[in-house]
Length: 96
Image 1 (cartoon, rainbow, N blue to C red):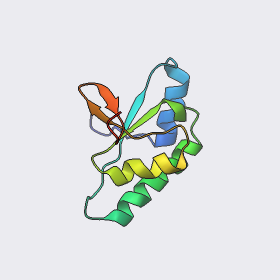
Image 2: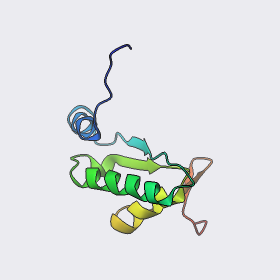
Image 3: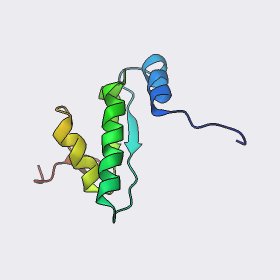
Image 4: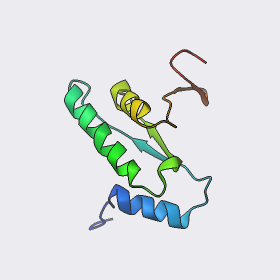
């Protein structure tokens, strides 16, 4: 759609909280340059800060091909545990 604007994460979360059922989940993919560790950490920090102000933080599932983007939220958000999906089953790094 020409002229369509992408909402901010805050605007999206407000809609998520107001217009979806509590079992609805939002998948947020953190895309990084795998060669730039500082940028990956900065992106994860910005996402974590946005989640802390979000009315729908518990409904987010973070996905990324870059483990740095997954490990940082895991260290800073107590309910968050990174996993690898294998045929629809979430497995943590130890394979459990």
